[in-house]
Length: 96
Image 1 (cartoon, rainbow, N blue to C red):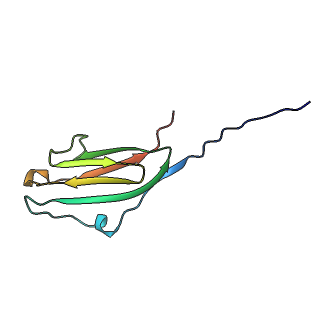
Image 2: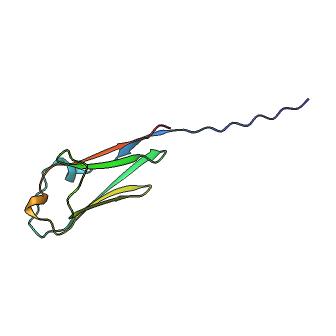
Image 3: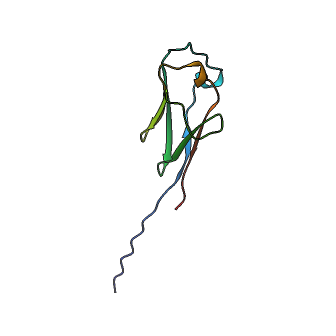
Protein backbone atom coordinates (compact mmCIF):
# COMPACT_ATOMS: atom_id res chain seq x y z
CA UNK A 1 0.00 0.00 0.00
CA UNK A 2 1.27 3.49 -0.87
CA UNK A 3 0.19 6.73 0.84
CA UNK A 4 0.80 10.30 -0.21
CA UNK A 5 0.63 13.09 2.30
CA UNK A 6 0.63 16.76 1.32
CA UNK A 7 1.50 19.54 3.72
CA UNK A 8 0.90 23.24 3.21
CA UNK A 9 3.00 25.27 5.62
CA UNK A 10 2.69 29.02 6.17
CA UNK A 11 5.51 30.72 7.99
CA UNK A 12 4.62 34.10 9.43
CA UNK A 13 7.25 36.78 9.81
CA UNK A 14 6.50 39.56 12.28
CA UNK A 15 6.62 42.99 10.64
CA UNK A 16 9.90 44.80 10.93
CA UNK A 17 10.24 48.41 9.76
CA UNK A 18 13.67 49.91 9.21
CA UNK A 19 13.93 53.44 10.61
CA UNK A 20 16.99 55.54 9.92
CA UNK A 21 18.28 58.35 12.15
CA UNK A 22 15.95 60.84 10.42
CA UNK A 23 13.02 59.33 12.35
CA UNK A 24 14.66 59.87 15.73
CA UNK A 25 14.49 63.64 15.60
CA UNK A 26 11.88 66.34 15.33
CA UNK A 27 11.17 67.33 11.73
CA UNK A 28 10.70 71.01 10.99
CA UNK A 29 9.48 72.05 7.54
CA UNK A 30 8.79 75.49 6.16
CA UNK A 31 5.26 76.20 4.95
CA UNK A 32 5.01 75.19 1.29
CA UNK A 33 7.76 72.56 1.65
CA UNK A 34 7.62 69.04 0.29
CA UNK A 35 9.33 65.97 1.73
CA UNK A 36 8.96 62.23 1.20
CA UNK A 37 9.99 59.50 3.64
CA UNK A 38 10.44 55.87 2.63
CA UNK A 39 10.54 53.09 5.21
CA UNK A 40 11.69 49.64 4.10
CA UNK A 41 9.91 46.77 5.85
CA UNK A 42 9.48 43.01 5.88
CA UNK A 43 6.59 40.88 7.07
CA UNK A 44 4.51 37.93 5.95
CA UNK A 45 1.68 37.81 5.33
CA UNK A 46 1.73 41.42 4.12
CA UNK A 47 1.14 43.52 7.23
CA UNK A 48 -1.73 45.90 7.87
CA UNK A 49 -0.55 49.52 7.93
CA UNK A 50 -2.34 52.50 9.46
CA UNK A 51 -1.37 56.12 10.06
CA UNK A 52 -2.81 58.51 12.60
CA UNK A 53 -2.40 62.27 12.93
CA UNK A 54 -2.63 63.61 16.49
CA UNK A 55 -4.32 60.30 17.47
CA UNK A 56 -6.97 60.63 14.71
CA UNK A 57 -7.06 58.15 11.77
CA UNK A 58 -7.58 60.97 9.26
CA UNK A 59 -4.52 62.62 7.70
CA UNK A 60 -4.43 66.22 6.46
CA UNK A 61 -4.94 66.73 2.71
CA UNK A 62 -1.28 67.61 2.19
CA UNK A 63 -0.20 64.18 3.43
CA UNK A 64 -0.38 61.03 1.30
CA UNK A 65 0.71 57.53 2.18
CA UNK A 66 1.25 54.36 0.22
CA UNK A 67 2.79 50.94 0.67
CA UNK A 68 3.87 48.06 -1.48
CA UNK A 69 5.39 44.75 -0.49
CA UNK A 70 8.76 46.32 0.40
CA UNK A 71 8.32 49.87 1.64
CA UNK A 72 5.96 52.33 3.29
CA UNK A 73 5.90 55.90 1.98
CA UNK A 74 4.61 59.10 3.56
CA UNK A 75 4.71 62.21 1.38
CA UNK A 76 4.23 65.70 2.76
CA UNK A 77 3.40 68.07 -0.10
CA UNK A 78 3.07 71.82 0.11
CA UNK A 79 2.59 71.63 3.86
CA UNK A 80 0.86 74.36 5.86
CA UNK A 81 1.33 75.36 9.47
CA UNK A 82 -1.89 73.49 10.32
CA UNK A 83 -0.29 70.19 9.14
CA UNK A 84 2.07 70.21 12.12
CA UNK A 85 1.52 67.53 14.73
CA UNK A 86 2.28 63.92 15.62
CA UNK A 87 2.10 61.32 12.85
CA UNK A 88 2.08 57.73 14.05
CA UNK A 89 2.60 54.57 12.03
CA UNK A 90 1.25 51.20 13.16
CA UNK A 91 2.23 47.96 11.41
CA UNK A 92 0.91 44.51 12.32
CA UNK A 93 -0.06 41.16 10.85
CA UNK A 94 -3.79 40.49 10.65
CA UNK A 95 -4.71 37.03 11.88
CA UNK A 96 -7.52 35.29 10.01
